Image (tube, rainbow, N blue to C red; front, side, top):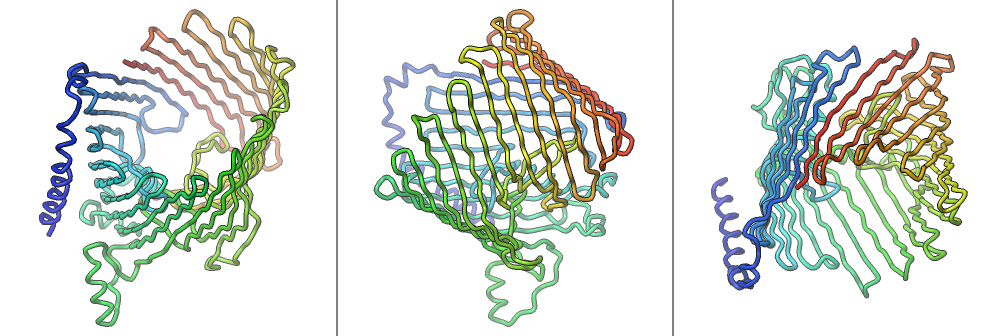
Length: 565
């Protein structure tokens, strides 16, 4: 069956290429002769680093190199290559990573091999990196993407949620991922069909140890439909529907069913395995938009079932339902621009994990250049959803956060258009959730305010400083408050050699008790040796002299080289 399917796919692709051969053979031969046979461009980068906190058990040294090349044959055939190698110390006995990828293309045909990233839907697979291969075909009004290989990045996040296994010499299951997206029509009037499959290889890991810690092989299948239509050139309608079938434990017991249901389950075994741990759920949205000159208005509905998840997305907010309206545009000859997304949001919509909640949700941003002296920017967001977690610095460490909401604003004042003086005020009050793997672990909040001054001289050196106040609260952890001064400068030493430095000193309060101070210093040298060569050197030192909050003393240095051609 496996080889019959591969043969059919090969036959289909061969037929598609065959019927397009006349078009390929009818190229302008004169233009072909004038083109250079081969053009090569790309880049190379390498760096060495040092990190010492007095606590890390791994080697403080690390390095990485990377290269990208693009071969252009007669301006019609493209072969991009990229490679990366790193020897940074990480957990789970992984001391290095190697990456190599290639994506040659000819007209509307593109192949992918090595480490590649693919996206087919925000509800199925988005930005997932695999080690494998893929094929893209994009002739007129038709697009096909197929790919398959071993899932890498998102899977690592999931593994790291089991710190108790860090010191074991074990292997995690290899997770394979496959996807297909088939689209018909022009971009403004298109329908797309998507399929997705992820499965852990049962015999590829240290099964006995993993099961002991309740880490089971998983399987996931998903299917989706996207549409995009334009009417009268000013009205757009977009829809996105997906369903996901998850089996969190491939060793689960079989389902006791009647004969007819069992026949149906037997039919879908070729697509995905199903047992008593399997669950299916839906996610879908629809958006209607109208454009009137420089003003846009849109209506959106979104629904994500409770327990909806997919192995192709690192984190996706579940159990929500939104009724929203979008407004955006600019006025006053472009001096005032705004965006607003507002409506009714239901979260914990099913009531499975507590009382169903409803609120008025708003995400808005305004930018107003009042005159040549004053600029105002303000934003607010209280949405309980974020399918794209980000890395944030929380109490001197980097954490993965989601559901980032709250208010932020800035006010900039410049006495005159060409004045060297700039005064700025910034304030933010944010709430967010910390994420570990695909689970929200705690709720947090942070208040940050800065008053800054910057002076820019005619010879291109700058000097600045300011006052900062910061307050952070994390559920189940210490609450901290900090206030102090910040200084920074940028100085061109000689031609193409620039030096930048920044430092800060802040008093620290832990749980309303005065608790030492935090000092940080950083510097950066940027030297453009020639048009295509650049060397950078950066260093930083962070000293947290506290008792109630664990003290820190960290040094970082990095030397890098970049070459472009």
